[in-house]
Image (cartoon, rainbow, N blue to C red):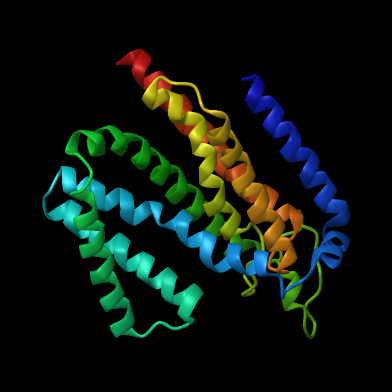
Length: 256
């Protein structure tokens, strides 16, 4: 409970700072030629999204039936779409299908190198992470479309800066909240790891959990893709989903 209050207090303060200084902060940090910004936008994001095909192929390897096979291939297809988007900037059907098959076969073979007992032990936590990621991403995508906030790097013509607390409606702009930061924030799920392993987090796990969303948030401002408030609200959504999932798990264990 104490951790919850501290995190929410920090995020609310940052949203307040964003309400006042979003534009000036982006003007200060904006550097679209940044190698760090490019890496986070095009490469690091793939590691975060990659948790989906890894998890669902692992599920397929443990419980093989038509449903898990379809789920595994669909997750590979989604990963192939993201790879072609961020690295090739194209969506040719033959590229998507070919890369999907390569991912599917490659991950399936990779799973055979991991003892089945280890896969079974890892799977519950990975499914938990995917649940948080998918639910948070769906909410973020909905808000993106409804909020209609223009990105800093997309100012042109009549479009202008608007504070985060004033939704603009459906207009094609999708700055608020940040999808990249949503994906990078799934490392916060490491705080739930003790529920699955009965062990305390190590210092490097804690560092990864916290630094991943912070680095992505900074990179999105550097690239002009998002404002401080866009990234903070994304972290807020993921953290809320995480705490809700943790609470549900604890109550299920108590009643079970």
